[in-house]
Length: 133
Image (cartoon, rainbow, N blue to C red; front, side, top):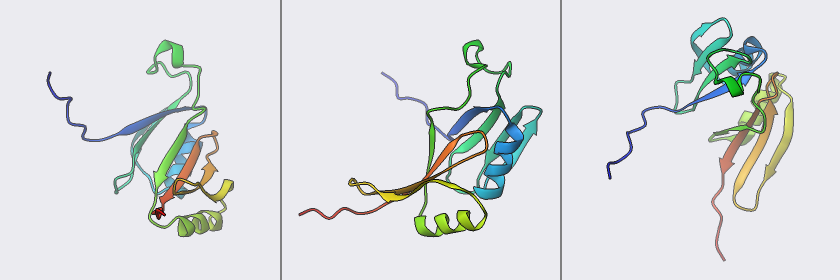
């Protein structure tokens, strides 16, 4: 059995109704920059280790036929950050609506969520160290 190919990058493709609106949200508030774009398409990256994002307009022929009329739903883009409180404050100061307020889960995950103009949920996460008894 041979080993799987080495993965050199990861990209999430999101199908949205308004590519320009999500493009503006990701570049204005999330630190992404445009790598390439065309009508109904945008490829976005960051300079750190974050997941790359491709935005495709719903109905695009590049999508498999059964997926063309669907849009990003039931999906959470989770981004781990090193200072959750500062990121929360920064986004609020930029006018981004926090759609799930900060909370801490019993397994050591601190998080909050925002939602882009197309309904894409972005969750910011910071992990805490759990002390054992």
